[in-house]
Structure formats: C-alpha cells, structure tokens
Length: 129
Image 1 (cartoon, helix red, strand yellow):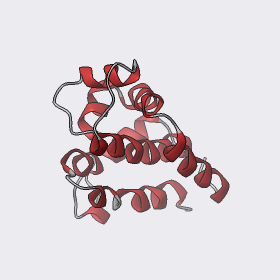
Image 2 (cartoon, helix red, strand yellow):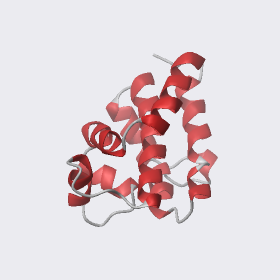
Image 3 (tube, helix red, strand yellow):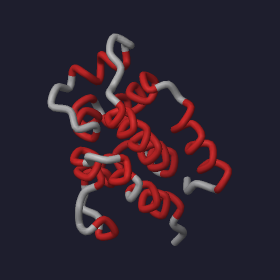
Image 4 (cartoon, helix red, strand yellow):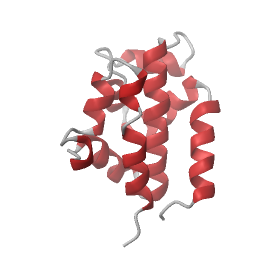
C-alpha cells in the first residue's frame, strides 16, 4: 500500500512526538536489535534494550538517528513490509551516491547528514508505477 499525504503527515508527526524508548522498540521489532544498533552508530547492541527499558537514554545524536530511522522505516513498513524496509535500508542507493541509507545513518556525525535520507525514502514509499 503506497502512502498518501495524510499518512505521511501522521508518520512525520509520530517521528517527532513518540518517546525515544517506543521508537527504539518499533525499530527493534521491525529491523531487529543488531540492525537498530547499527543505524544508531552503536557497537554494543545491548544499548538498544536499555533504551527500550528506560534504563539509559540515548545521547542527542543517537536519539536523532533513532527518530530519522523511525521516520524512514515506518514509511517503508507501512508502504511495503519489514523485509522491503530492511532491503532498502541496507542496499546501495543511487540517489544517495551509491551508499546504503543504513551506512549513512551509522556514520553520520551531524544532524544535517541525516536529512538526506528522508526525501529519498519518501519518494520510494510513494512512487506510482
């Protein structure tokens, strides 16, 4: 099911208002703990579980990576399914200079680096044949 403007606005709003622990849980449920840790730039996958349980809060950049990854993943899961979301995130993308979106998330050092991924994901999730 491709996404309409109303659904896209809901996903965007949710990406800003949903508590980080709930976002981490969504990503873990749809991508798995290892992939969630990777997109956040983590070496220790246990941090994801600690975020979900509320024991630890992510640092600012990790929290922003979670929010952007949620935004992208939610669009792809809602438009397609978990497997397509994983394939899109971890596959190379010509619109991102042949980098995998997950690689960009993982290696982002600034908030600005993250902004390039959302429009590309939106185009994919709303493309009409």
